[in-house]
Length: 176
Picture (tube, rainbow, N blue to C red):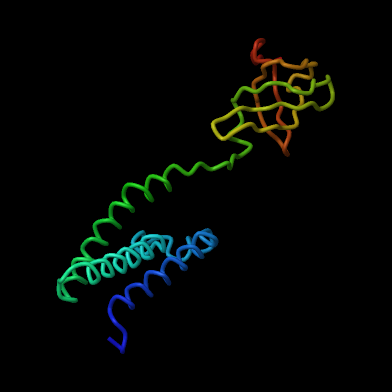
């Protein structure tokens, strides 16, 4: 074909696709937004399908006596099966396991935290909130205007302008 043997074409396509895969790994975050709503146009799926087809075609041409068209069809079938397995058993679970570190101030209300810098009567201290996403530190003030010592467990009542208003968790919240 075009003056080249099919094994040379398959090998060239395989090398080019391997290079594209390496480039994709570096710039994956940029490329992921291109076809966001269409899962089968995922660059990882397309690159793996073409790479597996080229590798299968090369191996079948080189080591079997099958005709070129039969070898190509078998390579496509093998690539379709392996790419589907890759997509459903590797890519989909990895993407759904992605954890977001984003939180809102409203989502912190009602959670418990620990005081790491004591909170004075009319000043600010600091608390840490432990969650599945990690540890969040936040500026804190007493909701009831009381001093809260270091290492006290507190309840976040509300968060305004980046400051968590807290009360001692052991005492609980009371309307005074």
